[in-house]
Length: 436
Image 1 (cartoon, one colour):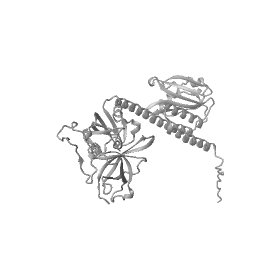
Image 2 (cartoon, one colour):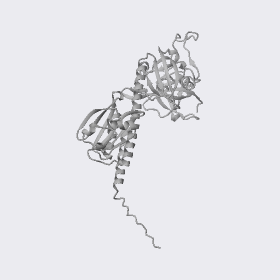
Image 3 (cartoon, one colour):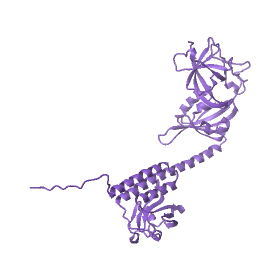
């Protein structure tokens, strides 16, 4: 018995059908719209671009944008075609296509407005509009309004068109929710900043890596740094004196698990290198569920620190004791002792070398750095270039048989000296090496 085989017509990819052409146009519009939404900074841009994308993709010449006003009791709608008109609509779902779309929470397709029974939209009728589609927009759970695209001629809106409109609505609503959240965050941050700056206490907020993220006006005044100068830099590299580095680092670690605020005294190193004694209250704050831990410091400044907080390192061969000037009575109240002098090297230059641990650097690895300050806890020197090392060895005392101390870079600060940019490097001593 003979059988008949049905032959399908040949398919020509180079000549797409009408449906394929529509799908390609939809895809191109979605791609372009997603790129715009990723950077949109305000709600009006999102709504305007969403309406334009729908009108272009569906090839409908008239587009509408409506937004809730009067506390959500009515809609303000603009119709843009040959000209642009604006009017107010009742929020009654029978009064307009927009109110009806918001009530049913779905795109509304109008095949022929003259036959429409679900609602009566007099303003669209006045424009001679016959067919089209509208869809609602949300920002999170809050309704924003509607967008629509129409024609004065009878036009068919396909299921593919409705799917496209639904996707654009979803993308726009996501962008609106993001902007709404960002605006709320900005408002909250502005309020927090105003409260911080109105406080006479010093306030510092550090992120989970102990980098400065906020500093109030009082703290900027005492430290002489602006927030822009220190933001994202670690507090230890900017304001902590070298001899207090270990103490403060330990307190920061302890604060993350402490149930009560930690009270302690330390010093702020100002922009000019001066010291201010501060009594701090340190607490940790969790940033959201499972988020990183921030540190919040609130302090009271007691004025400039006493010089006895900077014990002089004597620079001698044994190198492990501090010099005490005559008359320095250890039983005197804190803040009342005679000032201890800071020991200065015999010259204005220090001999330093990068250190990677283990064996002491060779003599050829050492180079000179301009001395600025030295104490029992650390040393500050000046370089013409930003250091590319974190650990170093410092040679002190007799050049023929120097005392070799290891140190860790605690802070690096750029400054202008004699018209040139130089770098002030603060280091804390970490140990002592045997001579090579």
